[in-house]
Amino acid sequence: MTTIKRKTANCIECNQLRLVYALKRCQQCYWKSKLKSWKKKPLKAPIRKKSKKLTQQEREYRIVKARFLSENPVCMYPGCNSMEVTLHHAKGRIGTLLTDRRYFKSLCWPHHQHIEQNPVLARKLGLSYSRLSNI
Image (cartoon, rainbow, N blue to C red; front, side, top):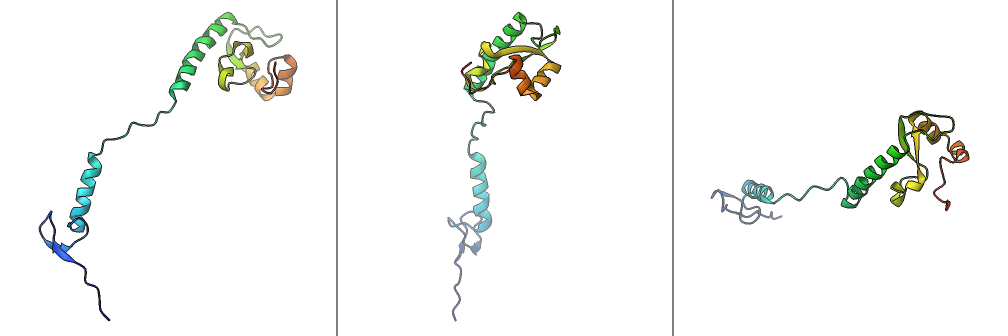
């Protein structure tokens, strides 16, 4: 039975008689040159956390939200006169509903949480709508 002998030659980097790995280099020199070439490659730009479109929508939303809350500083929950209000999106915040003032409600934080936890009551009071309806 014959054995296959691996090719030995002088490495073009270190000029020592070794097993030739690739590109006429020994294994050590080959990987050194590979690491150098990887370090030289320019880094790609990082992936954005938000798209330009979403950033623009949020910028517009902040303006619309501030204007609405300044015009409606009192909680809209029946019987509540609290002046510490947050913005409630009665139909959700998806797509154009994010800035659609028709579905904005100013609610104090306790009532806002109550409405979110009791959607049936919210619909009866007119503080929440189904996204599927045309109202």
